[in-house]
Image (cartoon, rainbow, N blue to C red; front, side):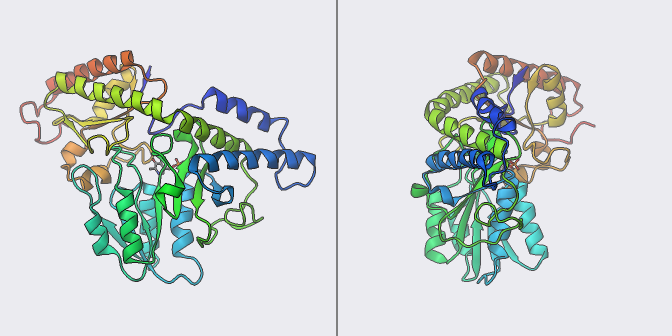
Length: 393
Ligand SMILES: Cc1ncc(COP(=O)(O)O)c(C=O)c1O
């Protein structure tokens, strides 16, 4: 099996599993308990928070552990927009956000908030001039992701943040779920107010993530109860998950530069090999350095992407069309459409995302298998010779 869907999720790595294991047995205490078992669990949560603060170059108290990236996005958007005494009711997001931001913005809009959606160009980039036009005196929050989960495009965050600061009093949130372990997430240098991460994209467990909340940033809790996480997210802490996130993030950051250099050259090789075999294929997204190094995304005119994925799966190559997070949906991806791809081309998209297990040999095998399967589909396809024509039924 060749697993090339690391943007969907990653396996828990050995060091993370080893760190988590004792929390399921010996260190089972409730961190809120005052006795020895509780104190031991609290110490592990504190240690994980310190580790993550080291990765993000922030204060430990600026980290709120959540039940994943989606929850952190929800906390950022709802927590800021609906906070008591909020000055503005205007929210700005980009057209290529993950559903956790997009659907939350839709829901806020249905509840009377005003939402502006920034367009992107053909490589998925937001134009800062569009943000400058969208900002208003009553803009309360701008949320633009750091790197996209379908094509890996990296947004010009520094410019977008600077504009936000100079044109408004809005807070700035970024969804860095795909960026953790790939890009530097130094909160001192980045300057954002809120930032989302998730453990399962960096060889940590599923169902745990965090929201960085810059000191002094006011947001209303979305889960109320026992007042954990300095009252910003109630509920007994997911100690195994939090320990796993702390370890996974620390290791991902430690290995980041070397690993991204390795994956960058492998993904380039993969794209080149596929294009050599299939010159009509169309790489999507932005060119490096505006693209995450582990992403290889490509559209095959005239091919039904779902059929290609099935054939690749049968041949042992596990990939995806765009985002796995909205799996089951047959509608063309909002990201592809926002980038101006036709619905046909959007449906002919392949996302190959590389990770720690990826080797040069796997890359070469994958290129050969993709070329073989695309050709096989073309031969069967009634649209042969008319690559942008209607989809085969
Ligand atoms: C950009 C982005 N944001 C948010 C999420 C949601 O994170 P989680 O699966 O931890 O809820 C994902 C992927 O799942 C993602 O890729």
